[in-house]
Image (cartoon, rainbow, N blue to C red; front, top):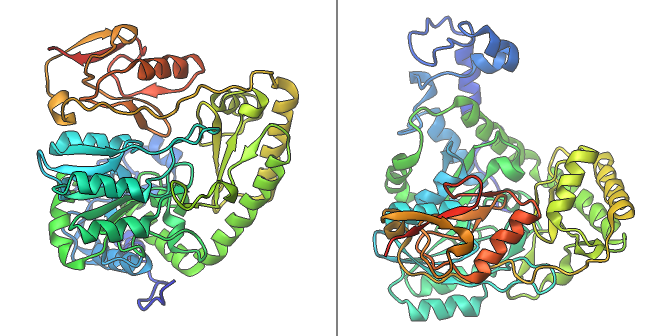
Length: 485
């Protein structure tokens, strides 16, 4: 890690808010609850201090849309902590950071190279900008059924076949902790004059703990979207957009302001500020504890016959270039249950909430606030579930990644004339909307893609085993809007 030069013990936004809270300011501005005085029910629920800090942009608190005071100072401190040229505080979640990246690198009808297993925010950004996706299809693990990283050889092939592409978009790490050869991809892209944008939603800790896979900024990427709230510990919906070249600050801020709220929450802003301070000062120690807990959980769970917690033996230095060791992904088909089934049992019978369950795995996020006692409770529950529910059906549906057949751009499809048809009767039609299992929010079908039999089968199977399907207009997941041709 780089030596920090700025005073990382500062938290400029939080400090300004504390000072401001004790002024005798008469508030004739929004929010209407007037620091809680006007809404006692809300004050009783959230607490007096929380509402006292829920204020509007004021002279001494700066303005998120065009910061020049404490917000700018806090962003500069974050930039140094994340080894970036600049760090923008994002309050519309990482979705708005992803949208900003895509909007800034590819205009209408320009190409962007990306893996198909991107978050839905990327697909929605393509709808906004009108860019044309060029997909690099990832391998799927033959046993565990998850999409893997981007092979460097496949990225090179896509670049050579599409030399006019403007940028490459990379998920790193993926939801499951799979890392691509990020430095290799960045070097290759830059050699061909293309920018690199990284969805680093699950990689906050890469910047604050030595020995973890390389971060986007250290790999030389042009931009990265980081969900501070996921593994960093800030409040939900608060994220950071990193850029390598500080000279692009004004340009990128303009793109941010296309989608970012003009009513920035100071609760979210201060949580980013304080969390950056905390991680800059204590990140090495706290993530060392996370590593210890995850290692213990991985070893104990893998010792239970029928379970397997993803480990370093998955690394092949290609489609799995590296693995995030803080992620606890557990393959469950060895006891005959889908991850979605174990997800529900853990929640309903053991009061344990994991991050996701898919067709073959569950993902448990172990973070800076977890303890060994909590880990042992999860281990014990998984043993109980095996003892009580194990079946002989060890097979798994043989697909988890749908090769896309792009017929028209996502934007063209989204704004085309559409009509609903039964999903079971949609074969070979062109989808006008997305459908996905959430989490992780990777579309099975995106706007502009041909609906294949594999996709239909996957949707029906995911629905049968209780996956949460979303994205399409029909909440009963029976009809899908297709283009009228």
